[in-house]
Each structure stands twice: as structure tokens, then as C-alpha cells.
Image (tube, rainbow, N blue to C red):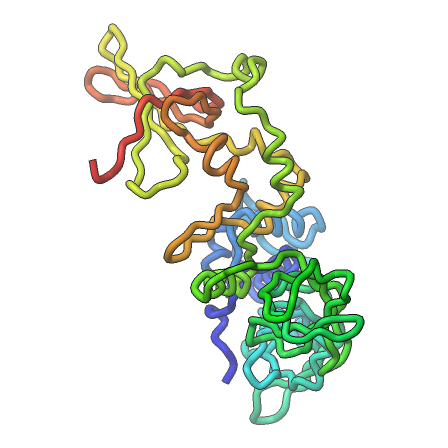
Length: 394
């Protein structure tokens, strides 16, 4: 049986998201939709920012048109007519691979009501989560079947594996994922001193073209003395498209920011460092994203500030940090740990509204009169100094 689409693992890539959005508009040409509505209707994992990006891209290509600030509808010239159903009646589709234990796969195609079954021998080296072009042949009384024509985008760059054997010029590793049954070969020069029995993080360097051909990879990390529990946690992260560690380039970029806020940056912002400010979070919280400030005026007015960490000060467009944060899309919470979206120096320090530290924020500031009626509001960038960390338990 094909897997239910809401049980797909991993994150959807931009090309997958854009394809899903386009197909939904083609099937629903009269609907006016925003990113939030699409997020509920699509059967892929995508956050609102990714969907907004897909909408803007389709808008720039003149495939959809804007009907309000956030809503879009399909352009009339792209609607399917009775005379031209090239989209609905075609035999070639774009979809996402969902492998099963037998080695075969189902291709998730948003334009079709049923998943497309592809036998292992017709996968053409496609792996779980890959974006592919599939040729479909619908058989009477049966679910559609097909074969992979082309792999458009690889979903996986890394694998967890265990070194099982050393050969003369390469080592053999076994994947920790049940969805990758291929033999993995690692050239001796790329072993990073890994030995038989070592558990390792691999980066794939060469994908197989045919069923049964080996993968080629290089070792990026050797897990020394890792116990079965931690290995299981690493495997869960990897199966869902996350790495537990940030790239060296992202860590280097995060380390480049100064501890002290430059004076020229403070001068650009409303300075609230002398205003009573505090955070309220769970007792176990490691980072503090938001804060509240409170100030009473001589005329009886009360000013309330709601502040959130200004991460955009550190994440400039197209930087390594920006691209890696986009790929991760979220922090990941497991039973016993959190894998932050940003390197720890940002997530737990520079972007964390810690007590007794100056921090950069975006703020919404509201002024109430002595009858607690809203009389003024202001939105913008500020610098704050949290006086106290409170917990919900307190």
C-alpha cells in the first residue's frame, strides 16, 4: 500500500514546494489563496516563508496574479480548457520519491489523485525524497504505474553509516537508514582515519545510475564513543533531513560578530535600555526570544513594549547563515535535546534576550491612558536591556 502523504519524512525543497503550489492553482483555477491557506491544503511540509517565496516566483513568471496584498489567483491564460488539457492529460509528471521496504517507491504527484508506483528496477538510481520526472502509464482497474525518466533534484546530501570492511583502495560502509540499501564505498583518501566499526557522517560524492550500483562518499565526521541512544537521535534527525551540527562556514560566520553592539547601530534605534524589561519563559528554556517592557508616565499613561529578538541584524540575504537557516527552516526539538536553527552563539547568546545584557530587537510599543484605552502605538527597531528572567513556574 502507498504511504499516506502526511507521513512523509524530511523537508520539502524550494523546487518541490513551487511545483506543488503551481499544481494546486492549476487544479483550482478560481481559488484566491495566500501562503497560510496553501499550507493547510498542500500535502507537503512547507513553512509560510517557503510558500511566500514560491508564490512570488510564480507571480514574477506571470503564472499567477496578485488579487490583494497577500492573495493570488491563477492567470486566465494558464487555465485548462476542454481543447487543451496538456497538464491534466499528460503522461509525464514531476513528483517526490517515497521509498518502501521492498526497494520500490511511490511518487507523490500533487496533480494526481493517486500516488504512482515505480518498481525498484525503474527507479534509475532515485532515492527517498528526490524530486523526479516520472512517466506514468495508467492501467485499467489498477493504480497508476510508471518509471523514472530523470532525477531533477537530490534530496539527500548526507548519510549516517558504519564502516564494515576495508579494501585495498576503499572502505565499505552500511547505511543506518533502511531506505538506503546500496553499498557505500569510501576512497581511502576520504576516510578521515575512520576504522572498521566506526560510525560516521558521510557526504555523498557520486550517486548510482542503476539499481544495485554502489554509492560513493567521503567521511565528514567520525563519531567516537557514541552510544546507541545518541546514535538513534542522530539517525532520527538525519531521516528527517537535519544535521545535528552546523557547517564550519556557518560557525565561522557566527563567530565573526562582536559581543558588544556597535554604537552606530544603537544610534539607529529607539533606546529602551533604562526601561524596566523582563522575560517569561519555561524553566528549561535555553534561549529567550521575546521580552516585555513596562513604563508609567507622570500623566497616568502606561507604555507596554513587546519585543522579539532582531535576528535579521545577523542574517543578511544570501550569506552562509541565511542559506543554512533557510534549509533548516526551524529548530528541532527531540525528547532530550534541541537542535537550533542557528548556531548556538547566535541562538543562545547574541539573539537571546538574556538578563543584564544589551540586545537588539523588533518592538511593538503601545500607550494606554488611565482608563486602559489604547491611545498610541509604535513599531520599529530598539535596543533593550532585560532586568530579570522570570519563569512560568514563578
